Length: 241
Ligand SMILES: [Zn+2]
Ligand SMILES: [Zn+2]
Image (cartoon, rainbow, N blue to C red):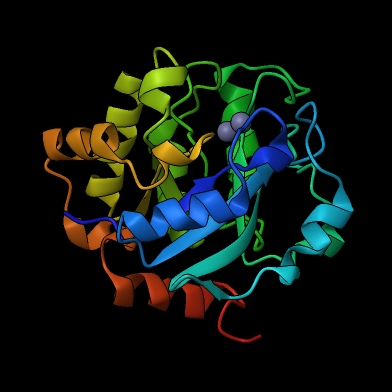
């Protein structure tokens, strides 16, 4: 399986990542990627950029060095209501919103009931594209109940290559999540979550896990350019402007 787009990476704008947008783009090109989404962290992550940063991402052309560049953000899910730390007026100017839970930003209780409620709320948010690294051991939810809802609402469940390095204890959850996506026919997306350009386009650990559960390639939205473009056309404004 060849992954053609990396739709979750960070730049120096996040201040705990160490490459520029251009360095990430060049690496995406070197890795033969068709597209790259720049998804820096939002307000509740310490040191993250402000609203002007996200609003002005249009300064970056749609295609750089032959790589399609998606203007994105990784927003924090803040509570059971599924509130995000990205103001609503910024949803439309962006092509790509990854919603994730992080210990530093989540203001509610981390129990399974609440995380289930939070993800169900997020699944109803039309601005969200990707359910970021939801295998995190800190935020276990009722996978059987929520995953079919992600599918019904056009959300892509992320298998995050960095989870296996930086989010200890998430591997067995990721496996369960992938197995349920297969069972319910829910599309997934494989991402690097790169914080330094040498990780852009690296998906080895995520792909190994998918192989272990014999995951069907046709459900991997970024394993085929036409499939990926089909998603962009249906759910984003990427081709409109
Ligand atoms: Zn980060
Ligand atoms: Zn994250």
